[in-house]
Length: 215
Image (cartoon, rainbow, N blue to C red):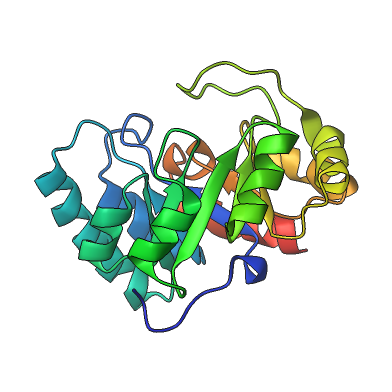
């Protein structure tokens, strides 16, 4: 694990890599650009890699992230996160339970969780997740299973009704244009993929997103 635990509560933007939607650019290139733009929390979400390939890439990406003061989480795999020296892991309902991931990674690790309904979000908080991504907020081209978009105001209502006190990052269809709507609803954290990976200047895109969220 990284020596200094970066707190999700101190970050406004969560960057998620996606090799299927990065205009042919590598995860290393996209992460390097994102951290150059100010990203401090990121997730490596590969597809189609063997465990050995996943570990090699994770180690390289963890080094890039650490050099920029960014916490790198790995999608799903607590075991590979431990071996790679990543800052933590991002889990979902079909992954290892949060308490078991905590036993593998330790108290200082960052554990994120993908929630899609209020009960799931509340359970993740009770189980010890450090933060939640909630999706989808807006219509999205993601390859995940289609679900109705809850909207910015809907997310605010879910945060309040589920009594969520850990950071919640709005995910799904979020770009620079959607940030004013999020902020108007009292949501000031977002998770993005293509709002960075499909932009011609990824570092500039990241810095603009952060400025919009924090401004």
